[in-house]
Length: 186
Image (cartoon, rainbow, N blue to C red; front, side, top):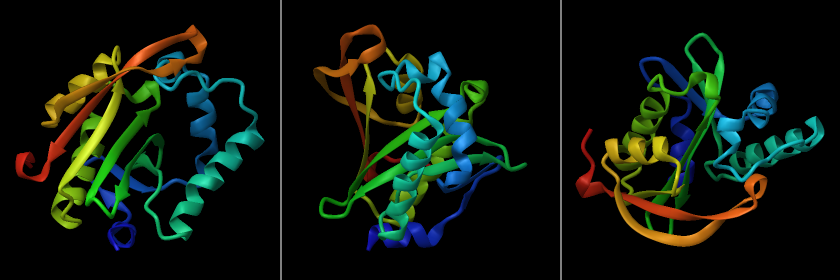
């Protein structure tokens, strides 16, 4: 029911952004981000994917909504320019969700990730009544760590060498962050 409620609230709007379900129309953004070294560094290196492979990926993401599960969301500027992806993956049995975000490197450092995440936190805690929202971050992704800490998340643990980075052929630690409803400050 939480997934259905979240879907019914879409699209989300903030002062500068519109957040709506990811669709095949977002193909150019994902192909652009596939080529960005800064963006790929923390994804393990999704490189050289064909247009057809990425369309299939987007179709899979979009099909979650048709099945009644909140899936990937695309973040747009108010002028309609797509700038990134975000989402809340809801675990209804445990009344929590993981938050995710990734932005076109041309739009990082401008507060868009903070703005999108704040909106998702508000939806998650205020509208859906979630008890906890959590995230995992590769240990050397300093920008993401700062963002989560600024949003009030607490570092809860380390999963040692749990992330394999293909393009550098190395293992990195995952840092687990969490934010409880009782800790959430608007």
